[in-house]
Length: 190
Image (tube, rainbow, N blue to C red; front, side, top):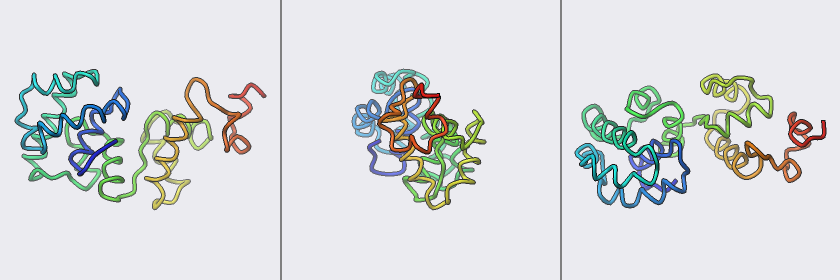
């Protein structure tokens, strides 16, 4: 996603639920022009904000999350994005996945972002059996050095989008096929 500061990354990540990063990137320039910081977004006109967010889907809920998030930043954090997982997950609309994205990419704090791609590939690669993102995060943390967590998740997400897709994995084009425990099952060569 495109962003120029931790606040923009936080809001963009919250908005990315149930849509693509590319779609979020089409909306955020107008959003941040109208509401450049937490104070402005906390005071946003709800209908105007919904109009901006409409292309993302779930725009009413996303508008409510953005206003609540910005108001909480202003009331509890002096308008600054917190730098800890514990503080971030207390913000409206922010879960562990969003918190880890912000920590890793805005502040350089290693984190494991368990989105649908990371969870799916971790199960396909037999790194975990769990469907619970918190357990998947813990299982991955045992396998990858902490200093690599953020970048490893970026690579896994990219691989999941480009090669090891959910419905039609491109096993024949996968550089990991030889070591993938799911390769025979997914490719029909079992």
